[in-house]
Amino acid sequence: MTTPESPRNTWPQRKVRLDDQRWKQVRIKLAQDEENWQGVVELLVQGWLSGDVLLSDVRAHLKERGLLLPE
Image (tube, rainbow, N blue to C red; front, side):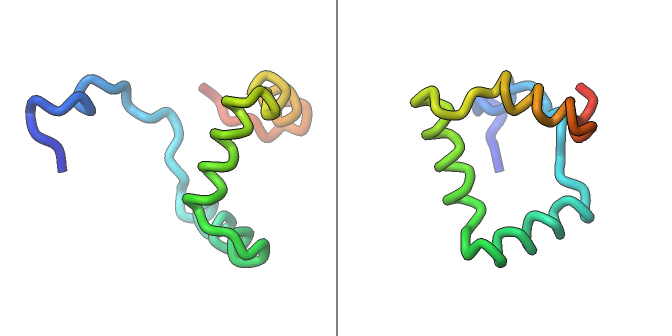
């Protein structure tokens, strides 16, 4: 919960929310890979900050495969 003064109130709305089907796919993949959501997200952020995960490459790859969600 946020207060009226919370900085979160100035953040833009999220463009993508996981629908029920995608969230189900995420849970199945996490269980199969013995990962947790927090660990996956932290690893991706660390990879992005270190320059090992290039968002432009990920976007291009997803677009090429027809998996990029519209903005």
